[in-house]
Image (cartoon, rainbow, N blue to C red):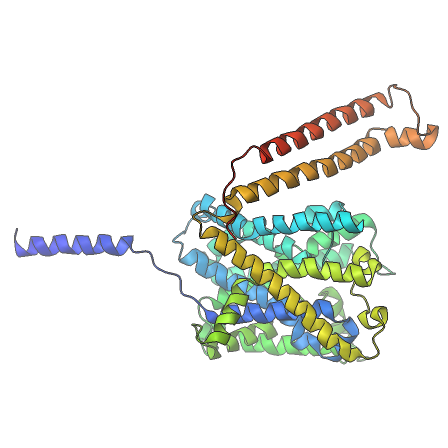
Length: 481
């Protein structure tokens, strides 16, 4: 073989080797730091009353937890898809993508859901309603709303990344437009009710809007944008500093009301904008969080070194499990302190309810909640990882499958009760009972409802027995913990 031919063969081999080597996604320790800070702030947000947080100027630091999570989500989204090699919508919406997201987010939430039902049955606060469709737990815990946003992002992210790769500026603009449209819908058709309580249907629609991933796309879009480069001096990032100044202005006015209280056209304009753009997790505030994100990315190392940084890294990686455990734990705390707070979903006045002599007791109270939330979440995360070392994912172990089947058996009884309630309401049984008493005869009014109830009972009891049979007939394997 001649030298040119030999060189050609070597070139082909080298190209083949390069194509078979998978490009490893870069790791950013800074992102774990931001997630760790965010989860610390989340626990603080749910441990302190609004009055105390307001006095501490929480808008400028503690309330940045969700913006940090959202920007990091957008940043991670871009890198995940970039190093997956997927470019088309078919490749982005792949079976592997959904399988990974379900294993990462949905299965841990299912475990939390099972625990929530157990606590709900014990406390008597088990609640299934229209908000269950949004991912709200049957036993509510603070921060539960973020789950709906997260699950919605699983469906939206591939299309968002695909569009961003083709038209970055347009995509960022559409992200901001998405929130503006949703804010306009609420401003025009669902204004604040006089006494702060929406009718049931309107309240559900407003909740669905506010937990939708589309409502938070501006922050996610900023994360996408910064994944292409977070140097503030880069010409493509020219808008970041003006956006930061605008955000700081509106954050100051949100806290103080200084500008919107001015009796002139300027004051009226600021007041209208604040009324149109509701809340503090909005596009008016994300510019401030984006600059802090950039400062963190620039000034912290990309790799963790040292014991303290390794611990922060673990907290960042386990942040989702810590969030889930925090929802569970703080829901119990709220119930223990005030049943009304757990029922109507508000932060109780801990000092009054517990009879504290000084508000300094909030410090050990917060540290207790932080310790329990971090400890429970980290143990949960490590248990999953240890189970996976046995050679298969934790959710495929027989002990987990058996748990799921037993949970399904219990849920079948709950669902049977719900089915009977729905049948009675919509097939005339409740109407008959209200007008003719609890005893009825079979006729054209009650007959269909009675038969539907009979078949519903047969179905759910059969399903329950099938789950119990399967749970105790599958083979055992070693408990991996």
